[in-house]
Length: 149
Image (cartoon, rainbow, N blue to C red; front, side, top):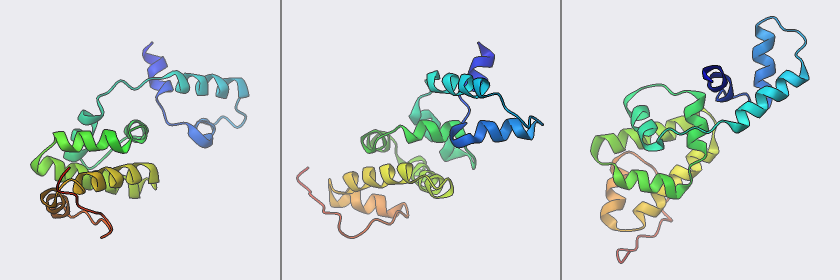
């Protein structure tokens, strides 16, 4: 079972498995083997708590492909909920790390979901808008602030 997790959670999208096996000296890679690994990867469920993963990312300078895959599955509503449950420096670091991760990994889904979550938060009140902007986040000026929400 341990071996299953090690291989199934790896980020082998887009031919990465073939490339990794070729690095190990395998010039010809068995298609059935590739299919078996892809099947394992598709069946793997990452049960980590996304908020805990984000808190770890906020404290470190690194991330794993598994972290990116987990975060890619989060919606803007998921990010909004996590952001609204987090406070202070930890929230600031979390947001900055996520935006950096999205740009570094060229992962527009994470960056888009995070930005949309922040837009929802700042639209709730002028105070929330000031707080989010104080974290160094740049949002376009078209965000409407509705203090009644």
